[in-house]
Image 1: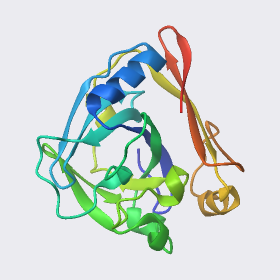
Image 2 (image 1 turned 180 degrees about the vertical axis):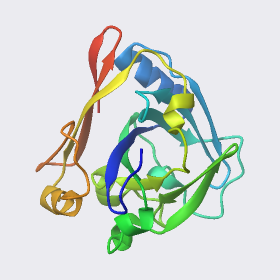
Image 3 (image 1 turned 90 degrees about the vertical axis):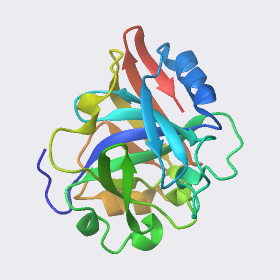
Length: 210
């Protein structure tokens, strides 16, 4: 998909967990499916599980990799010190030009850095303190290399993305920033205590993640 410099599209949901085993168990309980394997991120000392939700979006479970050396920076997705039940920790948008998309917002989103997983390299906004902006309500942004979307190479379980509801005390600010950049009726942003709720279509019907 060819995007304009400022256009954004839904890319994926990240479920944060203390371990991949806990995250996989959570997904199994909520969706009734087994998460396919993913890979590791040496820069961050993390690893993940990855599930295709269609040709251009996916679900990720991410946790600290106990076999990886500690990074020389804060881990992303607020995983340093994370000690809670698995939950949606972030939603991520894809950009055609991440620098143009985040122009004027890098204080909130964080610097743009190069990330790697196996032979894949991409750009992503990551705060220096590792925190997810606005406790997960403000989207992280990434830019994949040109070519087929990475979701096309992920394991499939007959699931697809149906909707995401983002509640936040900063809903008006988030909607203002996204106006003219994101056009996706599946995503709703409203006022309330910070909470992310996703609906995933599965072979046994629609299921909810939060």
